[in-house]
Length: 140
Image 1 (tube, one colour):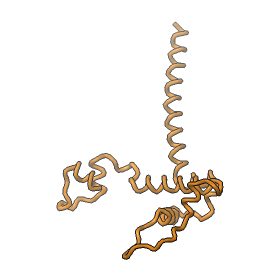
Image 2: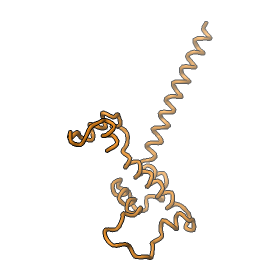
Image 3: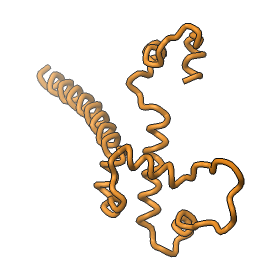
Image 4: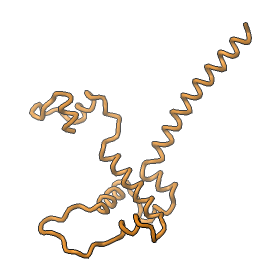
């Protein structure tokens, strides 16, 4: 948010809300970077969980290190981030077994279908204009 605030040349002293800064910069409807990271993290988690047990990424993800942690508050692990993202999106622990359901629940499928719809709409406009030109050319 700091980057957008600086780009809009608005300081925190002005007490301008983040939503207003997003409107000024034209990114209000676009997803937050945190949502994108969570979606990609869940996508990778489901992909790795569906892998065979002897694959290296799955072995690394399920490994529990034996050494002691350092003093102080422990750092947040990657799996804790996955669990938090699953909790906010109301995903179950074994939902990754069904790939289509996982894609829908993690938010990826809706984005893909919207992209496909946009491409189809552009293609439809192009084809209909070509057909109109052909019909108009044949009548002359």
